[in-house]
Image (cartoon, rainbow, N blue to C red; front, side):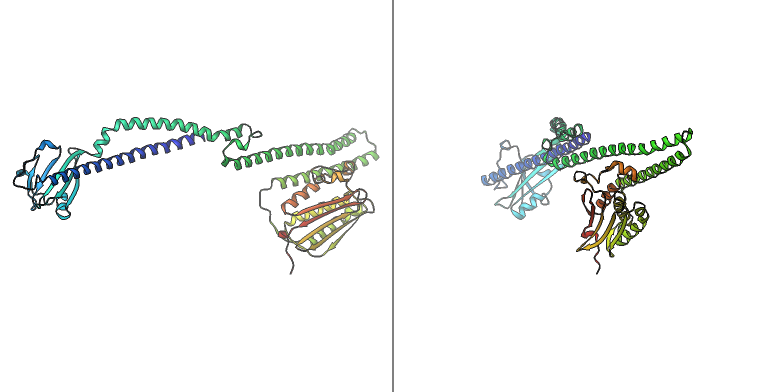
Length: 446
């Protein structure tokens, strides 16, 4: 970036130097031409007022008085007098631009360039009272000749300006990049006020993204450690029971019991792997989620029917109340959401307890409620239950096969649908989870 900045600045400086020199030369030449023309006009007026050329047949004039060429032209274009050339050798001047203009308007001027002599000749003609035209002229260097004459000085000035531009370019490039380089070296301690005010939003954004990346890295590291730990426990149990059976150290009764433990831990391991994979998919998903109009009550009914056997196994009664309620959502995610909430309510319930699922329309929103009569959640743990691998009762989670990832998946789905979730619970009484789908995600039935 520094090289590109230096190159850009030097190109701009070079163009500026060239344009400045060119423009200055043109301005100088125009001033020069203006000065020469003005000088010719003054001399012509003085000669006219002196009436030296009033009598064209008797002219007395000292050529040494000026360094100008003076020509007197009669009304028919014939040259009557010239200070430098024999009039007999001169042709008729009636067609000369400055002469024609003088006869017509009283004065005329022109510049003629000599390619051979590399010079310009400036002419000024004025109409006299006797009907003749007095013309004064002066030869001078052309723009090209003037430029060539001062070319060495121009080169020296250009070299000096270029060198100065190079030094300033290095300085300005370093000044511009210094805050950015400081950010690259130490992102944590960089202060937004150390840079240009235009960079402050950029610095804030970079720091925010940097902090998000660090946070995400720490979360992934913790997640990996938790996954490793959670996988280790059932695998250790499976390995231990299998080894006892393999070495013949288990009786027939033990084999049946060990096989049951292996089966239970295998199911727990499979559930854990599935939940981990699903959570990773939700974390890493980049594709656009497909939303559609789905009936939340129908999805809830399907989940309740699916979990009926599991509820009976835990001696828990599960029921659903509600009518058709349409939400704009991803159908698969809605199934996961309802299933995980109901599964948790069954898993952490008491024998003979109940789980009530309620779907209702409240104004412009649709509310999903899952209420159980389970063990409840202590107040200090309620804000942590949506964290990954967090369990209120670890021993019960292991017995029931809980992975600690169900509510983390629920939290992800809620975020994807811009919905809101609330939880209220009392130890020994039960837990009530309520999910509200906001107006932009609902479709009111007419």
